Length: 354
Figure 1 (cartoon, rainbow, N blue to C red):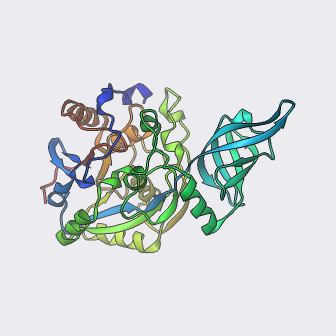
Figure 2 (figure 1 turned 180 degrees about the horizontal axis):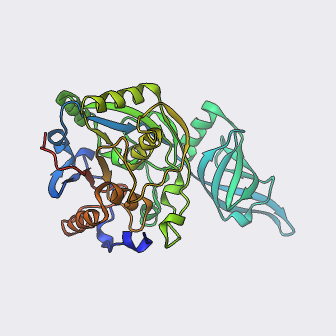
């Protein structure tokens, strides 16, 4: 298929820069088979059945955006330059890969100072990514990063406004517990404790998996033939308990509904044999139309960027023509798009509600 098959026109006004308040009050488009129903996220309780299982990504977003300065002596005296850093992922040796602007202003061995407690040495660059080694590790690093860093808002929000204190809460799920992501699993942002309690009372079950969402989730597809696109890899884990819970639910006819494309990609990675099992590692699974789903029976997800790999994923789940109709409805009805936008519940099979 061609990249243009996943394009659509989106009015700028529909790009959300703040979430709904409360977060569970966001709109929810339910696409079940050939039907579309306009709801609220709180109505999810009526669309899920006792015995259904939601799969939640418990990754925690780190404040990965840093602003610092590098200092250097020159013929004209001491000079400094502003350096902007977006952390990408830690290396096995304790260093971090990062995007740095402007990368050309750094020399190997130079120190970038972010705060009194946090600085990093530039150790070189590869494929446009810098290697940074910070002055502290472990809990000291976490504390210094939390004090100096800002939440790594997606480019389409960051272009409209800077991250602020409210984003520390808004851009984090209520069940986040494993630090490591530099982008939020945004479908999960719609859940608050009241909604989780209501779903439990309904008899809906939960399993937690971890996929540390990387900045590569925002990288554009640059090839016209999508089969030539290389997906970025992200680290994830499905532990033995989650795998057993998911397998048991499927065995008795319950539906497995991942919350977010990250959770879906992870459980499909762990279930490629046809039976889900514990799994840990880097996944670069690329889900496009024609993909055979082994685990997921549906998906709760936000509305995605035109020509993105996530548009390809939802097209694989629902069918390209069906997704085009769903998105046309969402645009006509004024749904809010992207990370802070509204949500959808995509159920390929037309099954009875509740």
